[in-house]
Length: 126
Image 1 (cartoon, helix red, strand yellow):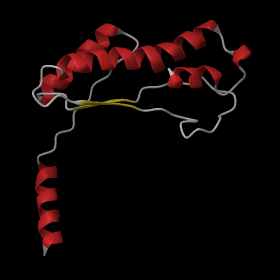
Image 2 (image 1 turned 45 degrees about the vertical axis):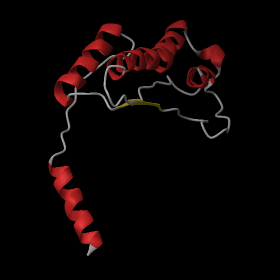
Image 3 (image 1 turned 120 degrees about the vertical axis):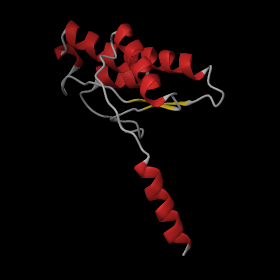
């Protein structure tokens, strides 16, 4: 009986759920500010922020990456996470309940090495 009650409550909660979306280039501070404003406008607050944007530009030796490739990887994976975290925290600091920021890492996060990902790995170690 307890399980049935819990499932019913969960279904009722999901019926109230809201999913929205927009686009954002996390390398652009003005895009990130628009994203945060969109989130607050649609949802009322930012309780949880997940930084998950990332790029790799392929698996190859570091010497084979162009300057543009390196700049794009660092801008997206590292600068993007910092810009997003800053803007989310700017909202969270004024919320009574605060909030939580989660930064997703990728290949090699379990302590293993991932060959041919020097640029990507550097940005994820930050």
